[in-house]
Structures are given as structure tokens and as C-alpha cells.
Length: 215
Image (cartoon, rainbow, N blue to C red; front, side):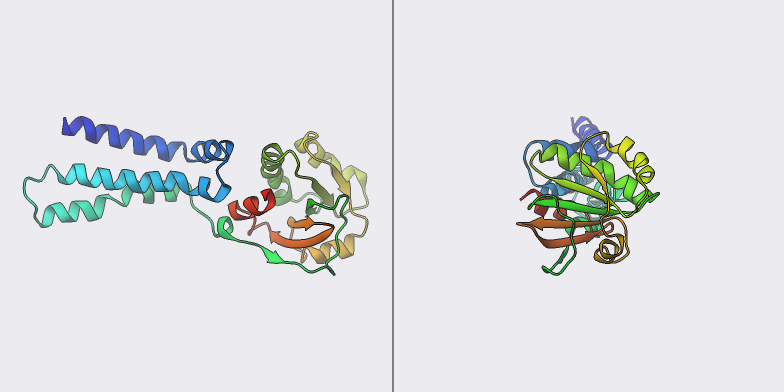
């Protein structure tokens, strides 16, 4: 019986590790916050590690040093393996930087997420999938994807990837917009009531930011 329980715990921990991203997305789809959804699989692995340690140490007949060593050694293993394969990044806890009214923006609407990009930028390109997920989960979210260029041909690669999920436009003033981005691309600026409120660099744009944008 104990071996069957041990096998079940190992299988469940393995499945959680393999499907961390899917568990996170399932939680988001069920209206949990992005940050909480990010943490759920790791909390499951902590619980799974505790159960694994208890069951394994149960094979030791008496409470002795070996049993304690097994418990201390085993319980963090599922979490550590999951974290090694799917790390939690500092960006997921970043609130972004507050911006003042003097920050240059090219807002089309009073409330939007302005994404400042440049042509042929792999990080800008990779951000599109995240933005499409945000747009899908928040139908009222206005995403303004702006490319710092005067050449319309530079938009084609991005347009093909966006596939109509949100508009892509050329910048009206490249110098001012690049300065707003601190010359680091992509940059994400949250606009509320026509005023910039927060900004994230690509390395700061994570689960906490997604929650703030969704508020």
C-alpha cells in the first residue's frame, strides 16, 4: 500500500513539473490573478515534496537520524526540479516604475498599453505572443504596438506575427518615444485617463505587471 502511495505521489509531482505552464494558464483562465497562477504549480510541488518525504521516511521503522535526513533531503526536491526547469524570474514580481505626465506618449485612446519597439528586434518579436495572450484574456485592453521607424516595410514581420490581434503603427516621433523607452526595447507603458502611470522594460514585464494592466 505504501509503495502504491509513493508511486502516486511521484507521478503527480512529475506531471506538475511537466505541465507547469499549462497549470498556470488554466488558473488564469479560471479568473485567478497572474501572480497567484504563477505560484500555484510551485505550491503544489512544495506540498508534493512534503508528502513524498513523509511517505519515504515511513519506510524507516523507527524515528532516528536517518528518517530525519530523508525528510530534510527529499521534501525540497520536487520544487527544486520544477524551478530548475521552469525558473521564476524577478520580473514576475516587478511593479514597474511610476511615470509622470511629462513622459512622451502616442496614445490613441485614454486607456491603453503602449508597447515601444524597434525594427528587427527579437525581444520585441518575442513579446508579441505574451501581448496576444493579454489581449485574449482582456478584450477591453487597448494595445498600441508602436515601431520606431519611418519605413512601413519594417512593420511586415511584426504584422504577420500579430495576425490582427492588435494594431501596429509607425512612431510619430522616434526620438521622443525612444527616450521614453530609455533606449531599451521593447518597453511597455501603461496609460490611464490619457496619462502614463507605469513603465516596464522587457526584463521587468511579468506576472505582477499583467495583473496591474488587467485592473
